[in-house]
Amino acid sequence: MILNDAFPMLVIIWPIYLLLLIPIIFIESRITKRYLQNVAIGKILWPITIANIFSTLIGIPVTWGLLALIEFIWLPKFFEPIVNILTPLEVMLNVTAGAAWIAPYSKSLFWTIPVAAMFLLIPFYFVSVWIESLFLTKIFKISFHKILVKKSCWRANLASYLLLFIFFLGILLWSFYDYFRNFS
Image 1 (tube, rainbow, N blue to C red):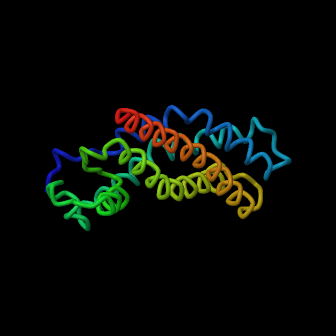
Image 2 (cartoon, rainbow, N blue to C red):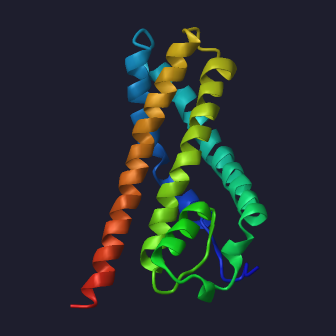
């Protein structure tokens, strides 16, 4: 197992999530307002802010930690010497299945980090929806129908995670551009 050569993706993803937290809060508040039309945006903004801070500061790192633990237990081959990985398909499978703690593939590092970040959006999305739904329905006791509140959480997080996906896709495209312009 080569842990020294591997890289924890939380080091990259978490600061980006923190930087994009304010736009995400506003996006999710606007979408939630569409579902909770009788509530003033000011009364929606505060619970959405607390829920997003909690899901970003607690939910994302805990989810990442669980994914890394699963990776260490079930994917020990992932940490074998990089020399054993020969094909791009094998690298891609290791980048997605081992997205929490990514090995540095020297020839393909330019695309592995954004792809791993995009793959991690999937479990982070579901955890964020769960945490924010819990906050909005239980802790803040919004007096609306729970199904409506949960539906707004699904849609609001879909929009914010689409923003994150576009962000990482932009990094991926820039990485490809930067990598291949050196060959011309």
